[in-house]
Length: 256
Image 1: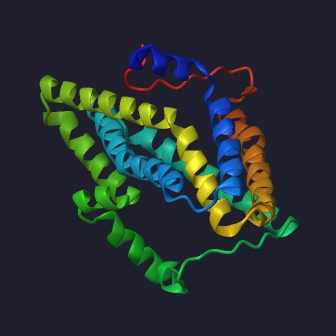
Image 2: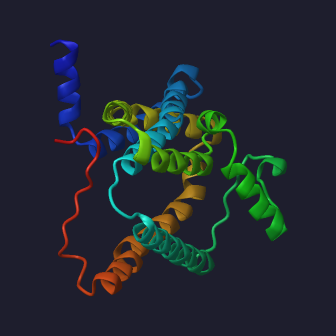
Image 3: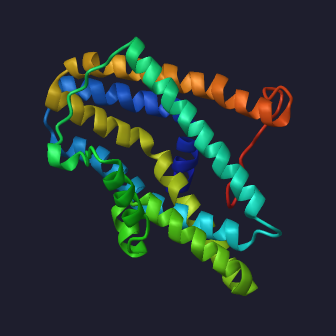
């Protein structure tokens, strides 16, 4: 069996099944042979690869979408931004309600100076605005998504009026390439999960699951409320119809 056939066989297995298998294997290895550096490295490599390529994907997708858009975008942008803000506010409210219903305490090994805490609303807004108009190249390397989105929107709108068809095709091709790279990385997520679980359990012991179990329950419960109640309610009010019969399949660059 050559490498291509082996990879196709690997891809034929459900990603969820592979991730669960990686989680269990990582747990067993952490209990059996803890503190083996090579195993924990798998998690660092997976997270590092995603953090490296995700900003580039966002940039090309936004630039490509806006550069090929037709007609007046003003009203559509207003609607999208309004819905995004409404959904975000409702999600935050749901999260706060669940945090009061079931308070959770989690230990974070992060120095206070790195938390980015501020008591001033003016300082908070100033930091956001300064971060938004930062160096786009630095933003890509540091994963500053607000800055990436800002400059990507600007570039996409400018290219919309002056870019040649060949330039737009290059942008589309780059979007397809980066998307395929992301899919390739995600296909090896089981190894990343294996490494992350192994490192966490080796360092903190099996007790780490007791501490994070409550947090996971609260997160999942809040996400289900947002996915199944608040967001569908927004769609129902906007479309004036039941959103659940609607079938939505996102189109990714490169899909046939």
